Image (cartoon, rainbow, N blue to C red; front, side, top):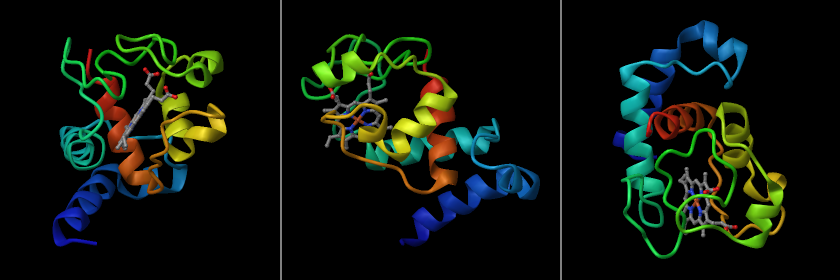
Length: 132
Ligand code: HEC
């Protein structure tokens, strides 16, 4: 783990504090620090395939702008039949489980990247849901 990534992880945990880490990953700290950690995590791990800028198509993976509240595969750029058929309404809980194990929630999806660290995942979900 690079020093930089470690700093991000520590920032995410530092912001959530002891109480949140006992309560579990669904209690994410909705602080500027975790928003920033999510933004950096996205840039380093997701932005090669996805954009969060409105109207910007990658041509390869769906644009994730305004993800909160919409159904899987229904955004501009669409998605595979597997993603559309899964009919997932994106919110904090569904994004948490999808990012932990995409194929577990949408069997057959071509999104194969998972985020195993709960602190990274919480920060990332907070960041994604803030793009609206
Ligand atoms: C190697 C390319 C690639 C990377 C890296 C990647 N994804 Fe994906 N992602 C995809 C593809 C392709 C799809 C469409 C899947 C389908 O249609 O079955 C997708 C779908 C999704 C969806 C569903 C979108 C919708 O409109 O329903 C979400 C949410 C998502 N990815 C989040 C992420 C996050 C967060 C990251 C970073 C941790 C990430 N992805 C990294 C390729 C990628």
